[in-house]
Length: 339
Image 1 (tube, one colour):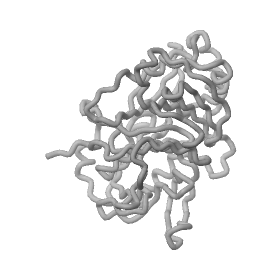
Image 2 (cartoon, one colour):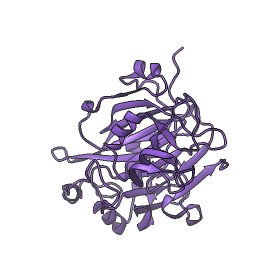
Image 3 (cartoon, rainbow, N blue to C red):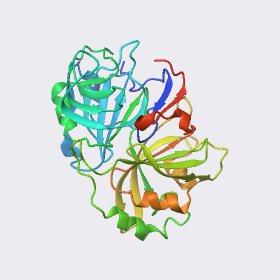
Image 4 (cartoon, rainbow, N blue to C red):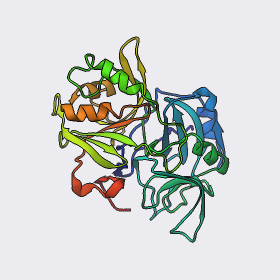
C-alpha cells in the first residue's frame, strides 16, 4: 500500500527563527510529479531537477514521518531526498526556521569535531541541514542528515533567510495573488509604492556568511493582535494588528514573496501552511487570511522597505510575548515542550 506523505503530528513544537511557524496536513488532492520515485527512494538516494524552476525563492520541507526532504523553487518541486532526523531523546524540533549560517566545511563543536559538510544552520543551539550517514531511520542528534551529493546541490541554491519547514505534515506550496501592499487598508492605492520597493535588487540565490543585507521577516499573531517586523531575528518595527472577524483563527501560514505582476497590479506569494489536527479543514484560505489583517502606517512602511523576492511573512495563532523568545532564535513553544 502506498504511504501518504506526512502522517498526523506527534507533538506541537513550533519554532520561529527570524521567520514563522509551520506543520500541518497534506492535501491529498495535490499530487505532484516524482511521487512514484519518491516512494521508491532507498536510504541515500535522491532526485534533483532544478530545470523545472530555474529561478525564484527556495523553500525546504522536511517530513519527519517519511524521512524525506522536499525542495521547492518558486513553488515548484525541484528535488526530493531521503534524510535522517533526530533519534529518540534527540528529536528534531518541528516548526519553521530560516537559514542563519552556511558553512561548506563545518565541523561540530559539540560532537567530537564531527564533520558536517554543506551545513545550513537552522538554530544557534546546533540544529542544521548537512551531509551525513543515512541508515533509513531517525538516527541523528537533532540535525537533518542528507545524502552527500544532494547536500552539495542544496547548498548551492539556499541563501541566508531561506525558510525550512520541519513538520509531521505540511501543505504543498500554492500561489496567492494579493493586490498591492499587504496589511494596508488601501492595498491597490499603494501598489505603485510597493512596485517601487520590489524593483530593488533581490538577494542573490547563493550568499556567503558575511552577506551584509539582513534577513527580514514579518510575523502576525492573532493571539496578541500584533505585527512584528524582524531583521536577522531582531525587532525593527512592531504595532497592533487589526484583524477582521477576530473570533476566527488566522491559521498558521508561511507566505514567501515571489514576484509582482505589474500588468494586473498584484503581488504573488507562495504559501505553505499547517493545522495541528489533520482531520480539520482550515477556516479560511490563505488569501482570505491575508485580506483580514491591517497594520499601522509605520509598520506598513517598515514592511514596504523590506519587500523583495524571498521575503517571508508568517501568520500564527500563538502569542509572541518576550518571555518566549531566546535571542536571535526567537523560539516559540506551543504545547508539549519536552525533548
